[in-house]
Length: 258
Image (cartoon, rainbow, N blue to C red; front, side, top):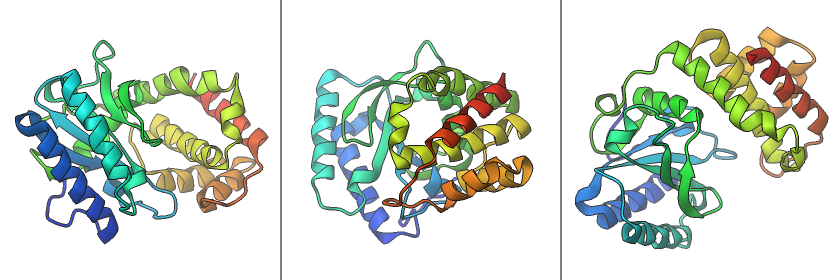
């Protein structure tokens, strides 16, 4: 069940930036604020201070006006400049309560804070069926109602369809222009994400990246097991020179989902 409490995570410095985020969001949104929920590695128990981000969703009563969106731009800029340790690792979306209940491709553009600090409208692709599942089943509530009351259950076949859609919409086109994968962090991220995709395709469940990666090592064997082991061990600043193998693993996963 989703957790609540004054100390939402075991990491005091993470809690400090979350306290700031919650207070500022409530101030800006006022009566439009419904709730704030953490998901991702903090909620799954696989948070790694060396490589993880802080994923959150803010639930709003309705669509936000341009004036409020501009105020949120300024608010997030102040948080990033606050000097709080994890201020640069926040990544989240603002979704109206009505739109949160289920992923609707016809209503999937929502305000979002990106990892580079920009704040704008983003289109939520098929992966947001998976994200809704994670928010519903694992979310850490900082304020507001239990996500189980806000989000419909996501069926196993819907999860499989969602990861296939993500491969089709996002990963397959990237194979045509892999320049973005020259960054070591993106390569490690891609390998672990493919493990999660393969796990979901197999079981109709969502596992954390480490759990899915260890499963994939044992299930797939070589030549992929060594690549997966390197991705699991990678830390910020480590070198990574496995572009060809990473691209091959993405192609393997795309083909497996066909």
